[in-house]
Length: 221
Ligand code: MD6
Ligand code: FE
Image 1 (cartoon, rainbow, N blue to C red):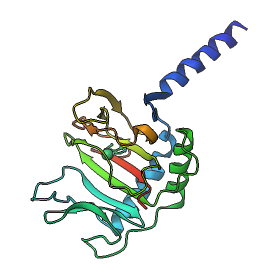
Image 2 (tube, rainbow, N blue to C red; image 1 turned 45 degrees about the vertical axis):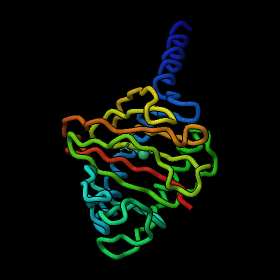
Image 3 (cartoon, helix red, strand yellow; image 1 turned 60 degrees about the vertical axis):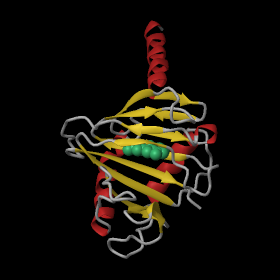
Image 4 (tube, protein in one colour; image 1 turned 30 degrees about the vertical axis):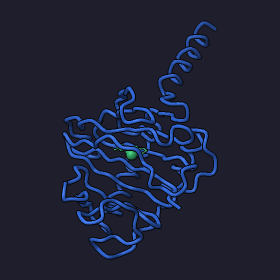
């Protein structure tokens, strides 16, 4: 009996560290996809074999640290002339993006539901690859036409600090370290929160090597 009690307390504690409410409509699930690392690694490589990772430029010619590819009806690109936007064709290969793999879609939908957003139908999956030391500046994602849908974000490989602010650029910020298999889901009142990624930590991940990968599933249209 005593052992049972200890077990259930452990479970409770584990639940607490596994799921963190980071905003009113934002949840971080620790290690949720840790058993799917190999699947995601292989599938990301297959997508990159079709549409290679590319360092896009920002308007005016700055370089985005993370290399990007993607899948879905539309995905994210950027160039020095028109800046960033969603496009149905990849500018490097002039081809359509590959479809979102069925399992990607299913995991994204399951994570969204776990975060309180039932029936999420993403039409875009942006895949970012960061090398050690790469960062992403403070921004909010507001170019999706459908802001009622959440964003589901999956992290794999090396760890990086996720900086979570508020609806205004200057709001106070909190920092959460994101590790391989972690999932963040946010929408509703948290949908337009400003966020950033701090420098990706040194290391060599047994599956993902010297990189951090982040997949964001979005409903653009
Ligand atoms: C990253 N993620 O984790 C960058 N945006 O590398 C994002 O910018 C992001 O994780 C919107 C929703 C979830 C995210
Ligand atoms: Fe973002």
